[in-house]
Length: 119
Image (cartoon, rainbow, N blue to C red):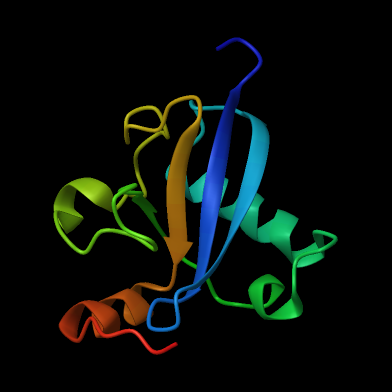
């Protein structure tokens, strides 16, 4: 796509409470690295109007492909779903209209060890 891709980033604040916000990014270069996209998203959400402060100030740091059968994200196949820092978005499997999850790896590890939800 010459003008860039549309990528929806699912900001996961809490796995246990299923607290997440989808944020759509337009004209995303799939040739940028995962690290560059992480920084772009961090910079954007810090000042994005309408995004609640808990999401703007949270220490997100890990991306994963999103499994649409799960409300928040899949707990299986980490090796293939978690995007690697040295890759471009395209090499990591991100394409136009892809949805990815952005979360703290520590939170994911705790939730994966005990995948219970609290409503």
